[in-house]
Image 1 (cartoon, rainbow, N blue to C red):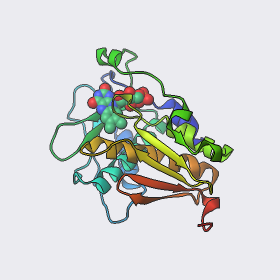
Image 2 (image 1 turned 135 degrees about the horizontal axis):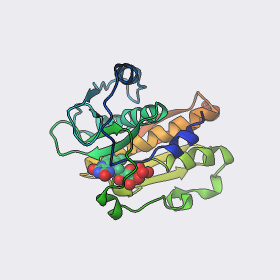
Image 3 (image 1 turned 60 degrees about the vertical axis):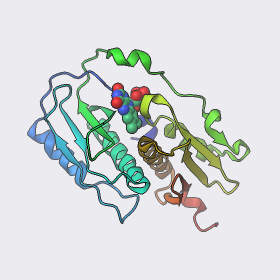
Image 4 (image 1 turned 45 degrees about the vertical axis):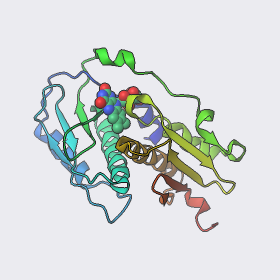
Length: 228
Ligand SMILES: Cc1cc2nc3c(=O)[nH]c(=O)nc-3n(C[C@H](O)[C@H](O)[C@H](O)COP(=O)(O)O)c2cc1C
């Protein structure tokens, strides 16, 4: 299934049924947690699942250092988990956490179909793609296929804090608005990087992401590699 289809299927669920995970579910989820890709080989996160929660079937989190590189990795791998869970038929929601040791956790379960009261205060949908993009004159059909699923990424309060700068050689610089002091922004940067890379790899598995600064990463499409 194309990444865009799964990105469209994912949405945040805040009310769950009382579904209890089966042994088969737990096996599939622990396989997912052990086979995550890596944005930075120097950083290892140890994702764990806990069923010690009433409002969903379980939640997933990892201890992480509160430094930009680790938080970006946290968002990247966390969203890989969210997308993997969506593929398995689970509903999910990132939830900002005040607990020590991790900035946000991932709730999972089966949607009850009811809406949570808090949802009334969150803006729905996404801003137009154009509003995030600098260098529109360099937009190609391939990059459009990357950007459309990228802006379906979740973000706290649906703030959509991303910026995309398209370079003439089809390289895409991805950053977040004013991340200073706000740990969640780095997590959100990791989340949108996962979406952009997964979409790019649908077209070309050699596509990659590299860090440019603490707040900006570059997506290199497989076919532009080596063009410098
Ligand atoms: C890092 C992060 C933290 C979030 N924290 C919360 C939260 O504490 N409570 C909540 O209801 N939703 C939370 N969300 C979900 C967002 O509100 C949701 O992604 C956004 O409204 C877009 O909706 P969608 O995910 O259905 O596309 C969070 C999302 C992210 C990425």
